[in-house]
Length: 349
Image (cartoon, rainbow, N blue to C red):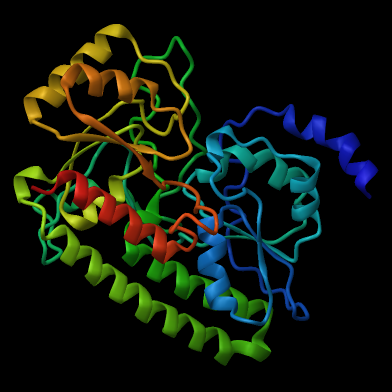
């Protein structure tokens, strides 16, 4: 079997990701399997949430390791084997799995794939509504594109080519980083409980009880984040990030995103000198005390801007993957608490 994967993988990876080839496959499939189920999640964040719902009934594997930038991740024969042997693949959706789309379609053609973000209100890249502490937005309700799987479908987002104009490609493209709003992960938990029940109805009560217990923890986390954020003066709740991954956090917890160093979802893009100068001017004008970058990416441009503006760069935020066992961000709840505390310390008085 391994020899087969070695032969087909170069052909799989030679495809170019365009329109989302997984569109329409993200529905709960009514297939019953014997436990323990062989369940694979695309990211460590999703795997951790799913494991809380599975409890001790089975172990959820992950395709992308901890402390890994998914935009730079290259599937291997082991990745293909994980998908091919799975009973169920869990995906974030909203165009997020562009880096795995061809592999999921080719190797996992007959493997049920479920999008856990179905039912979530999706934000576009570059448009961030602003909430007060009571949860009401002071921007129009149409800041969202619509509900994933109901009123909106998201094509796979791609990186910029060198000749593309900044912002052109990402205009109107779905932002899939929904987990940075804890209330969205509560919806994940409910979707996962329903999904596991469809595959293993004999343990319905276990999945539901696990989901309810985890949702209680998530609700407490959401309240804790709001309490921590309340210690930052409102005029200092301004974020400049290395790339556009904090839109849902900003929308949920009353922040403004003044700018992103790199365009849209890209983590490896270049930036023109005039754009660099404009960002330096913006940071100085806004009085932003820090630029926030992810722990898995190169913050070279953020460093340049910070040096010219006389501010600091925070390079320890977790965006798309959990940390290792010694990081303090080895679970979703730990990661959100770590990120929030880091932001509070950087922006507080």
